[in-house]
Image (cartoon, rainbow, N blue to C red; front, side, top):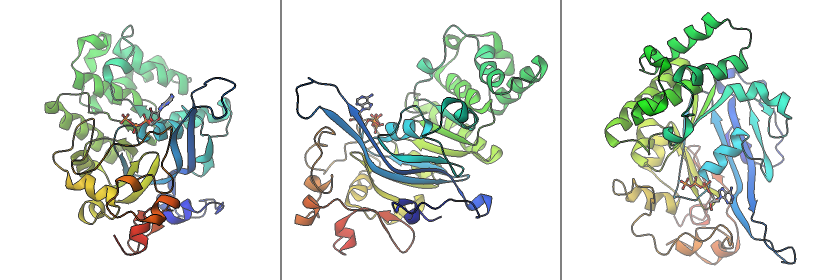
Length: 346
Ligand SMILES: Nc1ncnc2c1ncn2[C@@H]1O[C@H](COP(=O)(O)OP(=O)(O)OP(=O)(O)O)[C@@H](O)[C@H]1O
């Protein structure tokens, strides 16, 4: 199914029928996620963070799909909705052709095994009171209760070796390891249950620059060796270039552009993407504030009308402030949500 088809509301098409390799593994369709901040019950409009507003992406089997954008644009929220850690306000999530966001806990269990997550901070994501062995055994025993002790131990050893860790570290605790070693333990934990899909949310940004490449290489190696599909969230465009097969660029809860990595870097279409890429290599920080971009990102509690980027966009006209642009498929398959591009002004 093409990206454009996935983006067409009411297309309602199942992905069955196509050869396995061509079928999308993960689809987010028209996902909306609003956080209600409570407020006073007499308030007419309760304060709401509009974190995701009609976002659709399709992740194909075996690819490393990267999501980029400034801090607060909704990358982590989209990842959490895909993983079932947050319920979408609207829209749907499909995994291997099955709609999973509406499933009950029991029905979702097999999908929990197939979808794993690696978090940004390996210091916080590993339980300090559990040894490496206990941490790695736990998900295997939960998802494969019939395995014998010897089989579980062999599995731990095999996965530890596969991520470049010493299998003899099992009796040690997380604080005994460096950041890079801990993140490799986190990767091992995700791989223990033979997932198909791994979400990595800023997995290297908390690590020393000197070991970021090592950890990235471990992930690239596992992707090829185990035929994994990745959703990789990052601020760092040089990582995208290195790791990503396709890239989604987000701004203020919307998807601006979705393209093959090579195409995106060679011919960025959306004005926001162009500004972002023109800032490389200066923009690799948490803030990712591209120089030359006027003003600040508006609040997700008070979104601009029309295109959310219009008040910072050098190409904006009256239509941009009035009408939300829909993602349009270009001749090479790239999707761009921009009136200027659509009108040939881009
Ligand atoms: N639980 C929550 N309650 C209220 N607002 C939230 C919650 N989680 C996220 N948000 C808001 O949703 C928006 C998107 O946040 P999100 O963390 O998804 O962005 P991000 O692009 O991943 O940013 P970063 O790169 O800094 O992690 C932000 O405005 C954020 O403040």
